Length: 98
Image 1: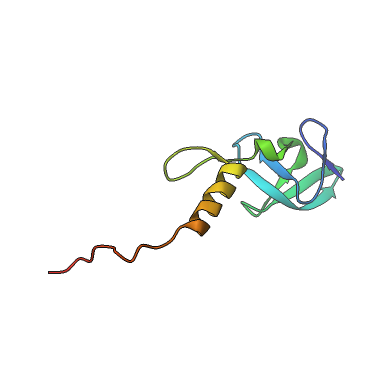
Image 2: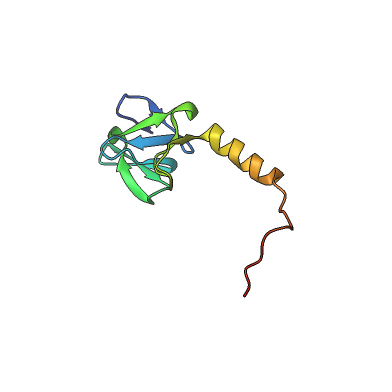
């Protein structure tokens, strides 16, 4: 059993943020060594002391860095994916030639 920086219990599959860098990831595993809780985060594949992470609610999860520098939340990403699935390729694309 592991607890975060706010003494909230951490479970496998929870999303957490490492407080020092803001790294967000999903908890893959939890262990305790010498009475210290540790969590393995998927994004970095590294173990973090549980007291140095915060459990996030789904509404708090953000993609921090995108090619445009904008922040997108999960709902934005779901909407963009749905829009891409509904796009149709146009066969009237100009061809380069010479």
